[in-house]
Image 1 (cartoon, rainbow, N blue to C red):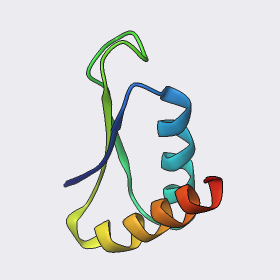
Image 2: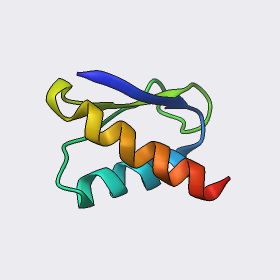
Image 3: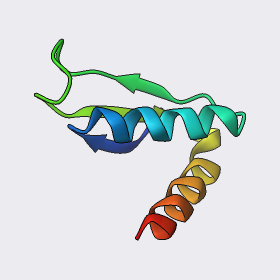
Image 4: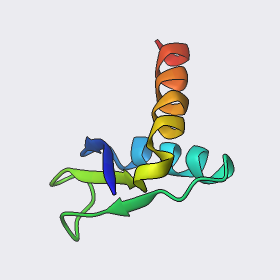
Length: 65
């Protein structure tokens, strides 16, 4: 598994997880805390899906500016 994103923003994590799932990928959200937003959580993806997942995230972040 490769870490794609690490943040305390639960909305951002949920959004990207949803996008990756809709693209047919298998993201995993690893929570570091029982309280969202307190400690950073990580969005991970299987090694063989990392390149495609990074392209999706990069495209969306570029569009959001």
